Length: 364
Image 1 (cartoon, one colour):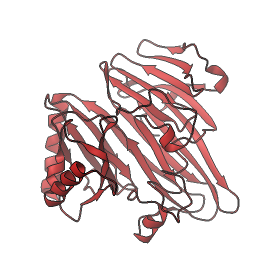
Image 2: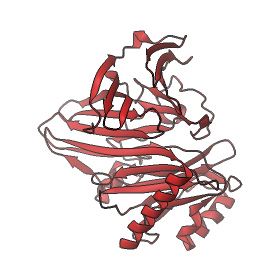
Image 3: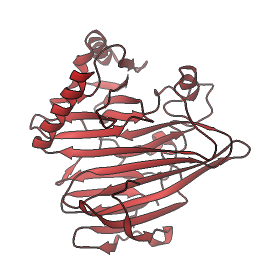
Image 4: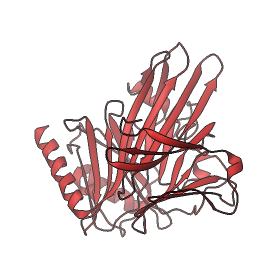
C-alpha cells in the first residue's frame, strides 16, 4: 500500500453481509458503499462517489466487475451482464479488471498444468476489507483482501491487492503484493487484465517504440479472413493498429507483446484517446512488469480494447515463458509489490499525458 493511503477505519467483510437486496453499509459525505449478491450467488460491493461507480467482487478474485465514470460505462462488451456461478475463466468473463497468475498466465499449452490465466481471476479470497482514510490529497475509499494458494511441498503464496479511489477524482489506484510463505523460491507470472470498450476512431498511444524490439504481433491462429488481412497490415506497418474503429472486425481477437520504456519515475503509460479528447489510461511501474499485452477483440458479440495488460511475460503459458526467460522469482519468505493507475482522463489531462509519452519516446 502506498504511503499516502493510511486507513483510519476498516470494515471486515463477510459473506453473511451480502444478500439479494442491496443495502448500504457505509455512507460518508463523499462516498456510499453498498453490498449485494448477484442472482448467481456472487458477492459484490458497489462504491459510488460523485463521479465514479465501481463494482468489486470481494471474494471472487477481487475483480473490478464494472467501472463507470460520469455515468458512462467503461467495461468491455460481452454476453455476461453479471458474474456466473462457474469459476472457469471463459464461463464467467465480463469484468473490467481481473488479476491473472500466479503459476501461469495466458492460454496454457498442452504440456502446461495451470488453468487459463492461472488461479487468480476467480480465486476465492480468504479475507476482504473495506478501508477508509484521509491523506494529503483528501479522503479515499478502498478495498483489499488476501488470496492464499498452497500446494504441499512446493507452493505457499499470498496475493493481496489494494484498490482505492478518491471522491472528486476518477482514477483507480491499484497496488498488488505477492508474498512467498516458503523458504524455497517461488517462480511466478502475473498479468493485470484491464478490459475497456473500443472507442470508435480512437488512437492508441504508448511509451513503446514501434519497432521489432518492442512490439511483437501475435495473431490468433483461428482468425477469420478479414481479421487476417487486418493483422497483415499491422505486420507491415506496426502503427497501423494504433487507430481503432468499431467497423473493423477482429475475430476472435489479436494480441501483441509490447515492451515499454519508462519515464524518470519508472512508470510506463498507455492511452486510448477518443476523438473528443478524453482517454482511457493505464499506467504502471515496470520494475516487476517489463511487458504489456495488447488484446483487441471485435466479433459483433464481444468488443474489447485491452490496449494495455501489464504483464511479467507473454500470454503463451508458463512453459513457453520459462523457455523465453520471462518467469519471475520471489526468494524464500520474500515479496514483490506492483503499482498501477487506471483512469478515464479529461481532454486536458489526456493532452498532458500525450506530451509525457512523446517526451519519453524522444529520450529513448
